[in-house]
Image (cartoon, rainbow, N blue to C red):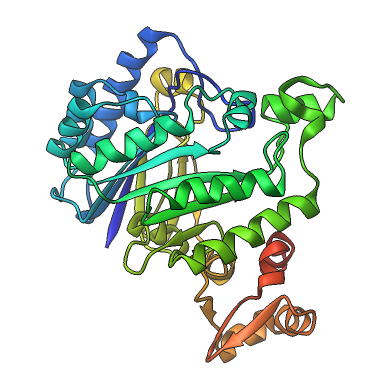
Length: 360
């Protein structure tokens, strides 16, 4: 089956570590942007009926009700098997949840990042641990019990002990799904620029070292799996049957189409990407920024090895990738599981090095 991604790049504030094409933009841009996205959706010639929808950004949970209804009204397949709304804690209430359910939303991904208030403040986030608990309670009361909690390992001032507290804070809410991202400092973020310039703002001098971040991640794997929230992808953990159906499409090379600024698509053996910036998206004659043929020989490993189940490895694969396979097996970064090959626990920590070797 296929999926749909809708990009909503508008935020109430820009997080210090964020390198996405999102942020705080003039209010009047939202209306123009929404109209352009709705037009893009309604003009699309659907080669499939999607069974998943994902609204990301940005902070789509702040989207006005008529805008949300207009965007989703152009997407076929409702009721979808899974329709996810990314949400900033504290950005919605019971009334808004009821509207989401009416529009077909049945899953929410909460950008929590930490349950330690001091760590949150240094990222620019406004919520607290209490806010998250109240949000989860409201979601369940409103009929949405499928939700994800995002955590980041490596925030400014974070320690192994404080990260452990965040893990316990997440598990106390009995989540069906948790995402754990190891902080990657990028020069396109305010934090990244501060580090490159040897500055001290945003806690730039208090970012944990690589070994500490790796320890936090390994702790997350052990603690979550002990609680029945098992890793199924490098950064994603879920109870049995609660994996993100939409995100699995990316890693299993199933078709999806994206709408809005910087949205990516994969269908019919081709990949394309819309123009990156919201202001450029609304003014461009064509919203499509680039397009190319997909390369299944390399992409199957580049994305498939992210999954804990790994990828099948045939004799024809051995002709192309045999040398890389044997090298990483010998280094203990890959392992056989039946007729499939997957990253070892150590290989996951060095996954970018492994992925690069499967690019043609």
